[in-house]
Amino acid sequence: MKRIVLTFGLISGAIFVVMMFTTMQFMDRIGFDKGHLIGYSTMVVAFLFVFFGSRSYRENIGNGYITFGRAFKVGILITLISCACYALSWEIVYFNFVPDFVDKYSQYLVEKSRAAGASPEQIATQVAEMKRFETLYRNPVYNFLLTFFVEPFPVGLILTVISALILRKRPKEIPEAEPDTGAVNAY
Image (cartoon, rainbow, N blue to C red; front, side, top):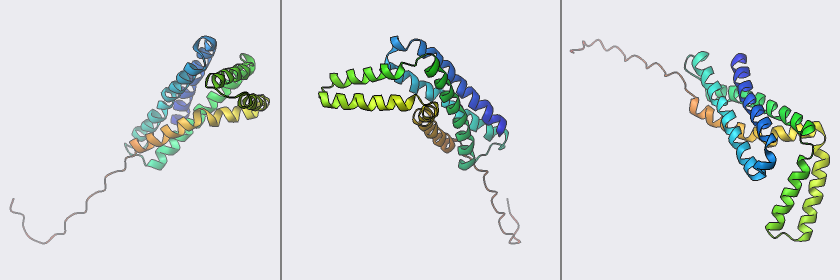
């Protein structure tokens, strides 16, 4: 199981890393709205390897069978490895290449609120919340945990459950032999 989990978890994580480093170079052109779409689409593609890894386990180790619990365990381990790759790559990107990300994102949210007709008091409250968030976000541990559990993990958890439901397969039970009545079968 360890080899399958590591292989598929690292493949999934590699997809995250490549897409993150690629899209962050073009973030100013892509924008935050399209960035979310690209980011969550990438998550779905990366987490398809939860399904493939669980299926590989079922076919290669489980002799074609896997319970929901075992499929979930394989899938969640792949998800955890993949999420760790995602969060670590974000740490590298954020602290080395886009340390002004929160400032830009805050400006985007304020402009979006203004366009939606928010009052000056609501905007001031939002700005104060974003400043507090920025202070917390500069802490690498907080940044890592928030990135890990808020962004990819919920998507991975959902796809893990769906994969486990789709892939579960128990061996068919062997039917009991009919009792011998001593009668001779005519056909």
